[in-house]
Image 1 (tube, each protein chain N blue to C red):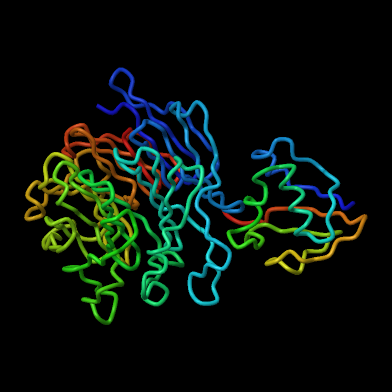
Image 2 (cartoon, rainbow over the protein chains, first blue to last red):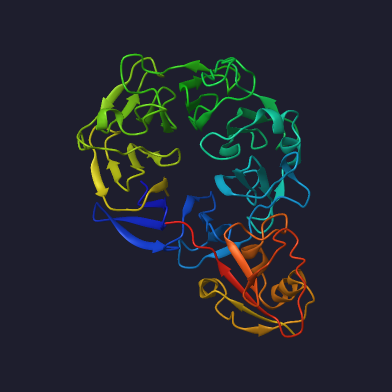
Length: 358
Length: 90
């Protein structure tokens, strides 16, 4: 059972602790600064990805659960790197974090906007750009921003069976995978649709909002996409759309998978691309326990009137039957029974960027 | 030597930051010297390509510098350089 939740918010890192079966705010770190993502690695260190705005993006690590933090300069492009011809590349946003897996205990992957994948082999002290992806043919022409100015990498999955095998999600380009720790890349968009392009079946140009894996069934991948919800049972080689045709589970940003049950996942539906609020201003979490063949909308404990909330892509997490999600309007909800019922932990937080059980 | 002053907002990250006289015939050289004294400072002020971050301003004797990309603005012996954050955000 996880007894700590890390919330990355627009105004700091909020740490919840469970004591006597009640969740309470324990501490706030980096007060006033946007924390775009907070997570824990397999060695137990906490990581906070910050966007100072004025002063750029910073990366912080704590080896003692927040008692002390070490700041690292974080990823940076090199002099002469260009997002597009004539447009100098500079890191605008740290958008994805992943530890390297058991094979590579010192390895950290970070994804940025613009769409750089950066690799650290020394636990964050230094990073290098994964040049093979940055130089991938067509990047400058075919990748583009979705909601942000430039394309960005928001998802990094390390295969638990083979830590050299990684998948990344790029908005907008799609899903790419590398079997060799980023030396070579393959596009994995087969079965996706890009309804916002003249050719919805384009090879590159898709908008996965988040990519997750059923960790104990590693060939099963899920994605909440701009154009629906998709699932793969062959490690991303082919995707099948599983959007609900007669209910809310269709558009949104966040998705969480049950590590143990390859048929179970949760999403936080939003109305639509054009209207980014809870559907009919009534907040719900939808779950499937059938691999997306059927969906159930859970509303018990969630506001059903005047709810403008949506959940950002990293702001939903699942652990051992519990779920937690945070919203753009500063509400944080927790469920102890797989989403059937919800309790509001907090209702006046800043905009919530990420939530993680740790 | 030119003197350099900083917005108090930076003191949260660099507690010892204060008005300092440093050698330098350009703003870029001055910041190089400041980096030696306050390691990590340049990354707070400059982006990956060495240009002044979008929401940071540098004034020399009250005038905004001209070259935000290469910081080539010339400095004289008694110049006063002030580094401020722009007004932005919410």
